[in-house]
Image 1 (cartoon, helix red, strand yellow):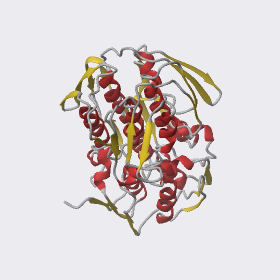
Image 2: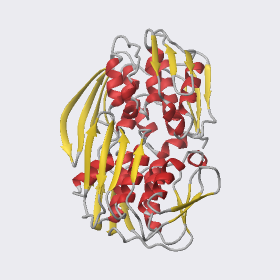
Image 3: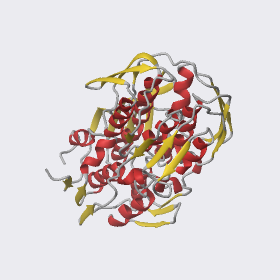
Image 4: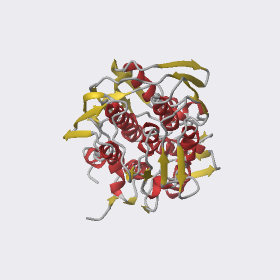
Length: 440
């Protein structure tokens, strides 16, 4: 079967209700924390993507038993110091930056060298941003290349608490240090720029020794070593980053409405919703509830008559960092000029996404002026595509693929989009859901 799809039509108006798979960030964190718990923990609606499977395979390397039945997963944790470290262990994080960075924090007491590898895309990403602070605990790292994978770690039995400033807004780096603090002696202190706080919420829910004080654009986090994590069950809510593609498809489709059920609307993740509202998209929450620290709701999206341009506030960047590629499509259809800045973190993802965003806009005939950290988009409400567009050679970035599919359905034209298997890292059922709207 060819690893590509063709889209040759524009989607029609729709009124749909859908359910999105489990949140990837929460799925990976549950796997890792459950592996340190004492006893059997169970998760329902666990995202069965390649990234989460890689996390499961990683903890199995350390002797943790895992049982999987459809989207139900059972992990038999052996306690904080339950990992069995052996010589010659290699962890393959595949495409998952979350797994690769967080697992390093969990194995900082390994007496033997552990090798971390990943796919071509992940291997290009900067790991010194996480190994530099982890080394302060007393861990030693060895790189084969300058700052990417593969790398090797040798831990220590004399781990000391650290102070760490995280000023990029990276939840992965922050969480890796939080995990490292579990086994360090003394109080670890973190001053972190606002970013996703799933790890902190899970720690609070589990009543682990964490204290978070919010001050302006930074969180001040204090952590003491953890003696025990109780086993816990988790019903994983649905992923807002995956839901965003369908929200944006709705916004770009005339006279359309969409209900998305049981979405995690953690305040650190709803930058995309705030941006869409500023651009005129009608969004409201229904059946809001709180579950183990996370805020969950059904989301109702209605397409606007006209999309407004936006000078995007930079304080929304961290809460929408995974959604900007598809947000750029809204700017392409808005009447006027939209401006997004301080987006250098986009090029630290699976592919240089800021560059790819500009490239997709150019291919669909939209003028865009980009720098290394900003983009100005000159929208065209009458945008219509009739030529053929080919999307390939993008380091198999799942979000480039899905953004291209949304653009094809929203704007028309003849599209040939390669590497459809890329969606397996985060959203394996994406095309199946898309087919419920219009056959690809």
